[in-house]
Image (tube, rainbow, N blue to C red; front, side):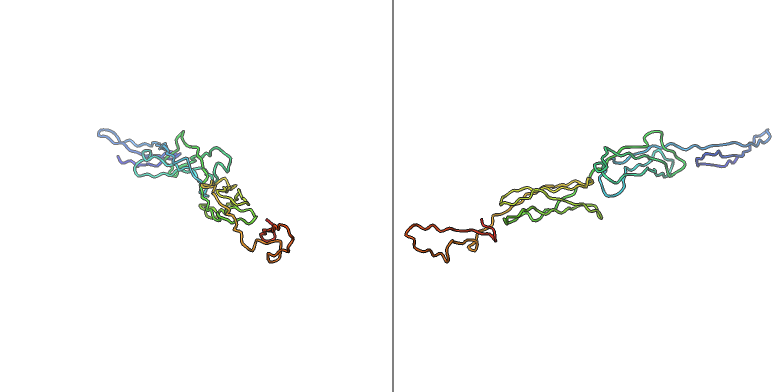
Length: 231
């Protein structure tokens, strides 16, 4: 006898009307209730070590193909992810949970529906410029600019390690306060070269280098000035 075919799972039972015939017997008609339960699937979680990218993110979760029937497809619905790195959030890890499936013929497993994950700060680099100076009695330090910051975000960078006197191999250090990032090359060396003395910076304590006779030794006094400063 022909029977209707059902395949979708549901909370309500299907009602089936049927008729049975056999040689030597009267035909029998009846009704049966048939319920199709959801099939439990297995989940696979993607990488749980993520890097800050300026967007809300979480590990991916997919249904194992072996859990599905035929050519069925099924997408895992997840709880909301996180944007900031754990360092900025001051937490050791985050948790994401599978909350449902897109195909009503399947159901989540009893276990393995959540996982912990981390978002590490994004590594960015420092572009250092102005690393060589000439002594001028003022403090100097290189200039730092950041490369690799997520588009649309502004991260301030400060530089410490300034020096005034001439010297080689000074060290400057860049720092940022945004914990979504870490610096790849936070330090650099720089130099302050000695300033060359010129004739214009020297003067004698006489006019045109002439001295009046004193019948004793004369020791000229030389004054060195850089601008208004006497050296």
